[in-house]
Length: 219
Image (cartoon, rainbow, N blue to C red; front, side):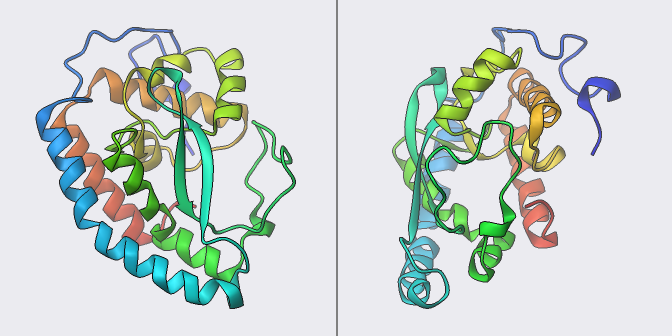
């Protein structure tokens, strides 16, 4: 995976500055809001179908709750609750640190399928319809981990100037990251997105997201 800090990719020679971007950001533009709500409503049908299927399959293949609920950091660093279809076995509270890698040993066969197809993300349309997330934007981190990143990662706070998204520039162009270096690259990509925000860029990221899903890239 390339390094945004060395490749010249990112945010114009100030890669991790705490910048207040004076952009015509599309975070609250009418086209973006209409796009989010329309797609969110359309996805309610597959969301309900997958939820019913998991209520039937989980007792056999992945015992436990169907939904995974997590407090995450949203716009202006405020907490909100995000929902996903659960793909991992439960872990002890606080078992995974802010800079630890993904515990893949906790993902079962059904969970791997949900992750590969990105079906586990469908419940997040509920947060979109509540106005707490967008289809496209910086990916929100768990609130506890984000509080650590605010202290440790220069420029991390600036990515919360816009509404977080299910997918974003960092997800399509950088991919899954962990560890300190990976978070630096993610933050640089998020700065690039905020600085160059437009509805056209959102549509391009949407297309890139579809391509990633169809080719089963990422985690």
